[in-house]
Amino acid sequence: MAHVRKQMISFFMTTKCNLACKYCYTPKLKNLKKEDQQLSLKFAKKGIDDFFRDSPSRYIRFYGIGEPTLEIEKIKKICEYAREKAGDKLFVELQTNGCFSKSVRDWISKNVNVLWVSCDGPAEVQDAQRPTRGGKGTSKLVVENLTYLNQFKNIQVGVRATLTDRMIERQDELVDYFHSLGIKYVNVLPAFSPVEGSEGEKFTWDPIKFAQNFLKAHKKAEKLGVWYNTMCIVNFDEPTRHACRSCTPCPHLTTDGYISCCDFAQLGPEYEKNALQQLIYGKYDEKTNTITYNEDKIAKIRHRCAEELEKTTCKGCKYVRNCAGGCMGQVVNETGDLMGKCEQNCQIVNYLAKRMPRNKKLHPAFHS
Image (cartoon, rainbow, N blue to C red; front, side, top):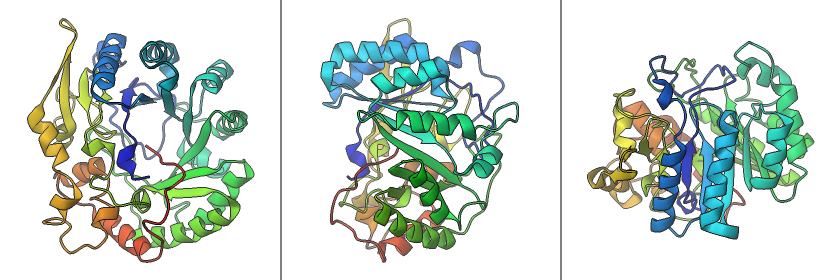
């Protein structure tokens, strides 16, 4: 399905995290006010009111700078409120690092429809790249939670693996590993460049080497009944105007009271003064319980579409309708330009588009 079909409201629950991932791209600012470290329940409810008013979608998603399940009680309240409004039509997605308790796991099993767990592969890789803040390994707990939740037929369980130089050329091993755990949906991508305020390391990688090894792993996964995906092929199944929901835009509620259109833009201008503020298009006023939307910014965000890109940035590219410029947040983070492009991603798209079927059948699942 063209990624833009995934219309939903996202809640950035907290800036706190129980892990210290080596490549974390999200900001870890030390000057955050206490009240800006967790999402306001009142703001979340107002966001739901506006989204359900303006969109037929009843899809809600939990994500964040930090680990969303650290705010599980607030997640429960948001789900209860959304279910009062949407009834049986409510669809819930959670993206998590998988390091949560049995009580959280039990709640997830009864209330979440789509679960994406960040897991980078076998213990040697997971424990090195995604340790706890105290430096301990996380693989055992993540695998325990993954395999437990994967047995429930009411949940689509997938993993999101971030690739550093440890695994770029071992992607076929990732397929074997996750297949051995019974996982049928795997999404991979090389580590992002950190945004301003991040403590993560910046990794360098070869886009063609990634693409070659991705294609090999994708073919292997197909034979095993595993969907092995990456952001660069999410629109290979049908032509699209927009790369994803961010370009329409769909609301992402930040902990400090702003409306963002993308997972990359996670805080407002008081804390981040970089180019990602182009992706912030609304502000919540707690006193009046209203959200003010900036229509000029919305228009500029929507302007990033295939027909505009093929006139300028993507001129002459025959794959623009199966890419639409790729991830807008990554582009703005790396180039500062809403209409810019990530050269590495372009190389991946071109390599894979020449070797993979396009516009033949819809993909079975999509991440983010």
